[in-house]
Every structure is written in C-alpha cells, then in structure tokens.
Image (cartoon, rainbow, N blue to C red; front, side, top):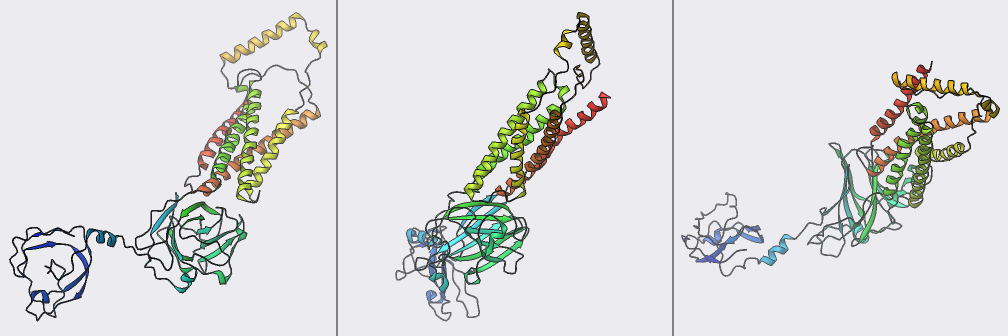
Length: 508
C-alpha cells in the first residue's frame, strides 16, 4: 500500500522511472532471475506478493541503488524495492490488505476461557465444521461426525484434570474426558453415573474415539490435549454455533479421587473460518449451588465457632459474670441461637443436595452433620424439661428465723462482699445456700445435659474444620482458613479450661 509520487533523485541505473512507490511486502520468490541477461529486470528475482505491510508509505526522496548481476552460485538476494512497469499488476488495495491480515489457521487453537482463577484452570479450543470456509485438515471420521472440537485443558498444578459435557451443569449422567497421568491410557472417555467415585466408569472401547490425545506435566503444571468429535451415537452432541454446558474438575493427585476444585460453565461456540472467531465470553461460571454452601458454612461457623463455645464458657466461668443468674441468661440465649442457626444451616445443605441430585449423608462430614442436628434438638428439649433443685428450707423453717438471725446473715454477707472487694480475686464468692439433696431425676439430667453438650461441641468443632476443607476444595480457594478456626476456638475454650482449673484449686 502506498501513495504514488515522484522519485526525484533516482539515478536511472535500473530505468528512467519518474513515478512510483516504496512498499514493504511479504511474498514468495517464484524465479531467481537470469544472471546471463543484459536486462536488469530479467536478472532480478520475481516475487509473488501476498500481502503489503502497514510500514509501507509513498515514494520518498531516495537514491535507487545499483543491482549487480547475480551468479548461479550466489544466494538469492533479499527482497528489495523493485521498480514496476505498467504491465505489472497494481499493488493490493487497503481493503485487500485488511482481508489478508484476518486469515487465521483453523488448525490452531483460537479461543480461551478461564475456568478458575486460584488455582488457575483454563480451556483453549477451536471448533471446525466441514464444507465451510475453513482451512482445517479434516479426517474422514471428523467429516462423518459433522466436525471436531480440538482442546487444551490446563491446570496450574499437578493432578488429574477433567472436562465433561452435561445437559444441566450437574455431575450425574455427564460424559467426561478424564486426563489421568498415571493410567496406562491417560486420556479417556468416562460416564459419570452419580456423585460418587464408584459411579465414574470408562465407556466401552468402541466409544473411545478421542483423537490426538496427550497429557504433559512439567514445572508443576498439567496440560491435557485432545480432539472430540461433535456428534457421536448415544452421547451429548456439541453445538458448533451455540452454547454448550460443561463441568470441569481438577484433582490433588494424578489418580482419580475427590476433586480439589470443580465448577460448571456455559460456553458459546463458534466454528472457525478464515476470518477467525469472535471473542468468547462464558455465560455462567462456578459450581452449582456454591451460594448455598457458603451460607451453610457461615451459619454453622457462627453456631459452633461462637455461640456454642460462649454457652459453655458462660456456665464454666459463671462466677466471673456479675449479677445473680446473668450467666444462665447468657447460657440459654447462646444455646438457643446455636440451635436456630444449626437448623437453618442444615436446611440449606439438604436443599443444595436435593437440587444437585447428590445422595444424602454419603460422607463423614454429612453423617456427623445429621447427628449434630438430632442431638442439638434433644439438648434444647432437655434444657426445657430440666428438673428444678429442691428448695433448701421449708416455709416453717423460714418463718422460725428471728430478727437477730436475719441481721447476722446480712452482716456475714456484707463482710464477704467487703473482703472480695479489698482482696481482688478471679472468683466471685459463692452465694450462701444450705446443702440440698438432688433428686435422682435432677442428677440424671445434669449428667446427660453436660455430656451431650460436650459431645456436641466436639462434633461441631470437627465438622467446622472439615467443612472449611470441603468448601475450599469445592471452590478452588487456595486458603481454607482452618488455622483461623482452631486459633479462635482454641483460645476461647483454652481460657475456660484454665479458669476451671484455677476455680477448683481456689475452692480448696
């Protein structure tokens, strides 16, 4: 491309041309020229121009260099500005140059989608359909299947990677391509029956039609390449010009195991042409029901990471809390909130499992969760039905007290309060009360209430820990915050334990 202009200072060695242009071109040398000819143009090599670069400009003031006659032994001269005659074809127009620049190679991957950011998981792909404006080299199988998807699934870590076609974004009944580096056949097609490892089974050998498969692990990264036919009998078809739903997963090891992270994505496909493809924007990303799991985790963390420890600490450290009976009000309120949050969190988990079609209570975390749900309801019911401690004195005994007796008791209480103020202690003095014999029902109630409470706290803390691990794996988060969990709960319960030891030692 260039503007025609006068070449005012050409010396004329190659012809007395007064007008022309200068261009940077890409082309193919078709003829090295005749070194024995006396005609300079005949001696010069012939170049078939395929495109003109943007750096071309109009003819500027320059001096045409002389061109020595080449010999057969000499290499072909590099492309240089060659004057043209009126018989040569005109230079390509700007429009043709723009079209030439758009030509793409449909044998190469053209689009990329980020499936997960931490750890990084990407899918690069290109979709080709026969009998279209594509320069892809089709095989007979690909033509018969109506086209092919070529893909590269990359994971910034070491472990298996998987991509599955799905009609609804869920794992059950999806058709997966699993890349397992340690297997004899590392890249194969599998059928996902349900949400369990035993239901992930390879398809029949006759249906193992993946092409050009390869898996590479270098520098702590995993890459899996494959070509998948668009239409195959008994399988979910791939739409070359529409949205396709996939689920993906990565593992923490090279063998098949519970995924480290997973999600679903709907990707609009566009078949490749010489003009390329549009930029791909995923319509939806992320694991199904992730918001349910997040809300479930928040509610359960509040219940068993805050309110349950507060309820227990308020009972153990009751003499640190000023006001008669205030500790019991805190204890009861914290237990009630713990119960309400547990019921709500349990309901969210059940709803998520129902919606995703996942079998209920199939794992340790889930089984402990339903046990907590049942026991916390029993604990609340047990608290409502607690037997009261028998009255220490009868009405007759109260009425038999003289004024001097009451004055003496009041004086003793004042002395006790004064002593506790002067001599600071971590213990609030026990209120004076006559010894009473507990009924059998009260004794049994206390044993059950305390034992069940401690058991619930232990299970709640453990399930909070495993829940954080599961959520980190579901969402692909690099941090699981388990250190924060154990740091907080350990601090508050450790304080309660130390105070309990101190209180017992001080009471002796």
